[in-house]
Length: 518
Image (cartoon, rainbow, N blue to C red; front, side, top):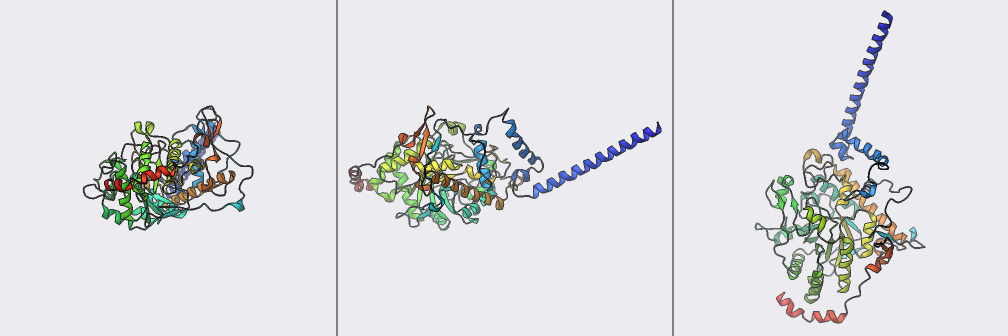
């Protein structure tokens, strides 16, 4: 009996000791993981949430199996589904972007696109570089030329964080693309990386306004002296909130953000619904000509198309007053667009989607023989190669994206952009959360994403039998109609004939009298 007791006692002691050792090893391993997570720079979630953040990858992996039985498929999440985001993540990390087994995309869903491959695709030895497009040629003292088709859309310092801006500007420089400053003004971080910049003038005119909030020619000249600032964009409206100015919650208006914008720290930054000095087409054309003359740089405007009658008035007035009053470019945003904060009523229900507005604008420019004078930039929920290729087919010169580059920075679509609690450091000014976003690492992802997307657009173009992406046209695209049947894009949006020259000539006869009053 004593022997059994000794054995039992020894076993208990051994088990307790083993458990203690295992517990100690476990604690040491967790400590090791903690140190490793907080010191690594590649994964913002793990850096901000050490050890616990690792469960994200486990759940993501298990989700592939659980979705077979319980949950929605990859393409059913909104606003960007898992399949769309996964492509960006892989492209940003420069990982293999091939997939297996078959497409999960519905091939009979109304308004989806299909590209028409040709019998003899373009061979690698026949591929040519994407040709460059010049904006402001013959009208701006310093026109801007770019061969890149994909650029970074407007995201202001304030809406996104300091490390995010730093990563974007370095990545943009390495990829040879431009970065739009957004309406928050020009911060020192925009200039650090040396990339080309488009300075956006919002309705509040942050960064270029005088003490009374009016546009300042002196400050415009000061901004234009930066060689990196290549163009100016007047923001009339934005896709996610047409008819509503920019909204930056007071919690994100730090002392530095307030200083750059010229507003009070900690107070909500609410821009006017529209420009207080632009009330009609002539005011807009006058503003474009004024900014171009003061800065010497190309000037255009960003707009969401709703009612479209103004296009006829705008383009007609350009012919009447002279092409020196024309915008050098128009950025077409759409109901597909995103933002950090907007009323849901506007985000869900106002404005035309890009599938309708982009061909409408391109056709109007062709109709008035102004397509070569005015370049078109397409914006709004285009983060994958197919969307960019579609925009080129329809007639866009350039494509810009904001949320695609946010995903490249590590955004996980946590939907907290309107707060100060972004878990990946992209849209927060909380230093503890910002430390998860390491600019040096994320700049590489920005570069990789841009270059891989443009490469994949080229892959689509070569499949269609053209030698470079800008040679894509409407004949290369079919749209799925309401019956689920593919139809040529040219059936729905035929190329518009140019307006007869005698009509244009008749409008020019009014130039002298109209220019005096205009």
